[in-house]
Every structure is written in structure tokens, then in C-alpha cells.
Length: 233
Image 1 (spheres, helix red, strand yellow):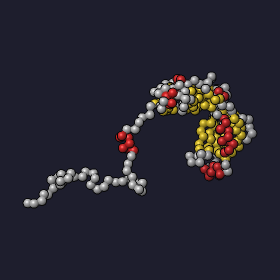
Image 2 (image 1 turned 90 degrees about the horizontal axis):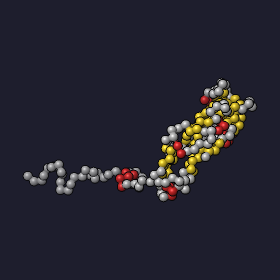
Image 3 (image 1 turned 30 degrees about the horizontal axis):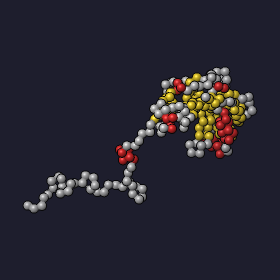
Image 4 (image 1 turned 60 degrees about the vertical axis):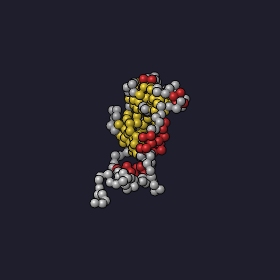
């Protein structure tokens, strides 16, 4: 099962390549710098309103129809999308021109459905989603937004590979079909050793309590085990 993407129009303004100071000024105005390259044309730099870009990326899937300064739209894929790690704002976007009549490869998210309904999970197993993204090949207009796979029949100790995932018509999976997608495992109960390693005594200030002097390597009662001085002559 898959969700097909449709091209979303994105209108941007041309941008002169400048230094980092100019880029910072752009971002303070709420604009995002970007570049489009590939195909038979030279790379072109552009700037776009951050909110407009977010809306386009949220609805575009894999394909955008880019128009620079009102020019005729050109089909593009998002090749790189840099975000601020703290604020989450888009810092820069790279687009790649594509031909609609030529197959391309792209990364597509793999989503699992029916996790809570699977017998293995109902019996207390844990479903581990191992492969979350796959490489597909298709015409740009046929690349799905994401691929969904139903796992509602997985039992404990079941493992599924990419061979079980059925892409939509016109889409080919390019990764190794033996790639593990998901498995249902029995949760491992912590051993006494695990608990001892994870638990440590702490004081009222939250700091680990250091062993009191003499607690480690304390000599047995009755004198020094090393044969110290004896009383008397």
C-alpha cells in the first residue's frame, strides 16, 4: 500500500549568491536560501518565504513544480533539506531538476500498520521496526509519498524482510530483498547483574556515595593479615 505524491507548485524569487552575512539577513527576514541544479540548465540560486516552503514540503511528497520569478515551472526533487537542530527551522534547501519521462531513484519512508493488532504484540512481544526507509526507482510522478506494510499477523519470533513489502505499480524496490524490515521479540527480563550495574547508592545531594575508608580490602579481625608487629617480647 502506498500514497502517491503529486507535484506542488513552489514560486520563489531569484537570489544573488553572497556571503554568510547576507544569508543571515535573509533568515532574519523569514526567507530561506536554496539552489536548484541538474538537467541541462545551470544551477540557480533562489530565496523563498519560510512558511511557503514549509507548506509546499508538507504537501509535495517527492515532487515539486518550481517556478523562479514567475517563469515556467520545472519538475524538481528535494535532494537536501537542512534544519536548525534546536528550533527546527529550515536553513537551506537543495532541489534537483528531473525529467518526468525518465525513471529516478528516491528514498521513501516505510510505515508499518497493524502493530497493536498483531498476535505477537498482544502476547507481550515487542515489535522492532528496523528498516524505516527504502530506495525505490520509478518515474517522478509515480514515486510514492510513503509505503505502508501491514504487520497485523506477526507472531512472536516472526521476522519479515523487504521481500514481503509490495510496492505500488510502476515502482521497484532497489534495496536487498533480504533486508530485515521488522521482527517481534520476547522482551528480555533484567537479570540481577543488570540491576546491580544500573543501581548505585546515592546520597541526599544526588552524588554517588564513596566507600568508607577501610570497607575495601579490610583486614580480617584479629590483627594484620600481613604479619605485623606482635605485642610482648
